[in-house]
Length: 111
Image (cartoon, rainbow, N blue to C red; front, side):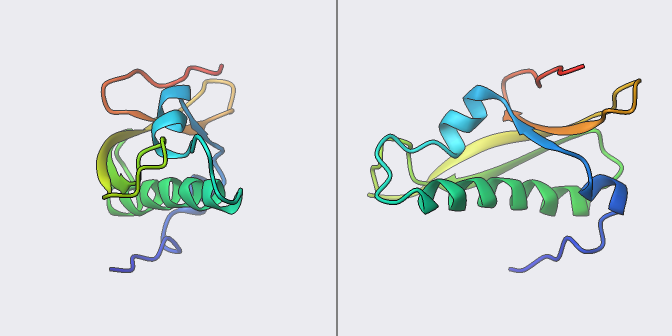
């Protein structure tokens, strides 16, 4: 299924995207990648899925979503579901950003 993100308000597409350390470890990190591009692919999949959900719910400040991914230890016997949450962090000083966290954890407060 292909959902375009071109219809997101440009202000949302310009926001920086950060991941909590735990979200990074579970969704992007690989203990022994065969090629560094694997890490880039995993990061791209997480961010793209977050944008897809934001496209469907552009007015929400917190969106639950998830991805199927191989475990960080490199086990490729099957993909495992990971529950994530996208937070739209609106900063008073104008430095707003999107934060991806594990569903059970709090977002990073950078400002």
